[in-house]
Structures are given as structure tokens and as C-alpha cells.
Image 1: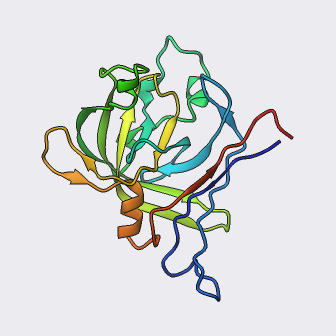
Image 2: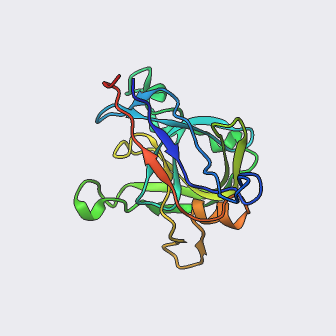
Length: 202
């Protein structure tokens, strides 16, 4: 089976430097699970909140914030394995580090006619932690997340766009996940690489 790999070229500023001063990427291995309601997609595990709630994500090159599927994303009308199919559910009430902002329209893909502007997210700030292929943990502190319940976006999404997040009420702007990692000294630049796996390949 061909497994995907998220080689987020999130270069560590101190630890990940070779003897010839070449930066080494933070490599995130896949979960080995394939999920989705429109195909089998290889996912990546990320801990959300404190203590970490482990969710499965797909990378998104369109949005700068991270979307997490909320408990409200599965109802009594859904199959019993809904939470597994959606890669896990996030409960912000169980996290000591979640800080709420407000409800805003997601807006993603609405201009393409794939979704509607009624798709909203519960925005706020949270800690994200994931394990790298060398056994270390990387944490992005106080980064923007959007809690989603809509099934237009079935799985949680790791936002990789580098632009700042501008709030609809024009109150302020917040840095993207990649910008946050750079500002926190976790990485040296905002590059990333992604190799998608195929569930049918050996």
C-alpha cells in the first residue's frame, strides 16, 4: 500500500540543522487510515487542545486556519460510526487552552458553487500538537481553529495557506498556522510539501 507523507517543510530553527547547515524538514507520517465521504483519503493525526484530543486531518492549501470537526458534526441521525468516519470529534469544553472568538462564515469554495455561505465555523484559538517521523512533538500554541459541524467538509483540515486570517468584523487579523510556527521559532520558512497516498496501490 502506498502511504502518503506530509513533508511540511517546516524547518526547525535550532534542532533540525545538519552538519552542513542544511535545514531538515519536519516530516509527519500518515495514520495509515483512509477516510472520506467522497473517496479514500490518507489522513494525518494531530492532537487538538489540552489535553490533546487526537483527530485525523487532511491538508488544505486553500485556508490559513485549521478546521476541526465538532461533536455537533455527528447526530443521532448519522451512522453509529460517524465519529470514526469523520476522523474524530473535538470537544472544546474538554480543553483548558481553547479561547473562543465568534461564529463566522467559512466561505471556502462558495465562489465555486460547491458549498453555500451558510457553512459557518466556531472560531477561536487552540494548541495543536503532532508527532514527527523522528519521534519528537511539535506544538503550535494559540493558533486559529474553526470548529465545524457541516458535512460539506467531512474531515478536519490542516490549513497550510500562509496569508493572515482577516476577521469579518474587521476587529483585527491573526497569523496563519504556518506563520504562527515561524513566529514561535519552530520553523525557518513557510514552505511545505505533500505526497498523497492511494488506498488501492501496493
